[in-house]
Length: 253
Image (cartoon, rainbow, N blue to C red):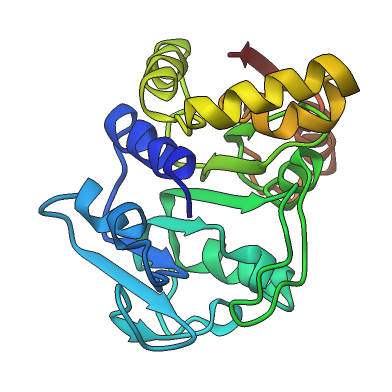
């Protein structure tokens, strides 16, 4: 967890109506991170459950996202911040999250990309924006975002809405962008920024881009009609064609 990702969560919490109860997957707060990793403080008065595979600060219940011990459709919102890179069979985890989400539920997920190996307890995976778009294909409305250089992002995230939730509107996306520019910040100390800028003058910008551009972010909102199950073959074909006619609202900040 870092201040930028916390700013992302705050932006989402203040922009969108997120149904409850709320489940946080990977809620363990590492030493020295309680101030930024305590996400439940962004949801005051809400029914909030934090789970992890080990006990500790921020953990209400011990559970594995690959086999969640909850009934179908038991949560309105799932948060999984900087978590799925540690899940060995991540595809099972994504399936379980969808199972426990209500039909009008929302998933907010993020994962580091250009980042060192951090075994908590193991570090298995990295996800591109295209990977999240594919893994969340069953969610008809979503935002895919990155921060840092476009080809070496520090992190990738997605806000994905299930089929009974109204599509993300242009007004919601604009409000989200405004809050992201306000809250999602991770500024460098002035001395480090100065040294990186001097280094870029002598060595070129590319080696220092992950540091000098880490406050920049890029996002895209993708909406498409929800798929309606039908035994009629022609309706099935029509639903499949809508899958590839996504309307997008693009934003680069």
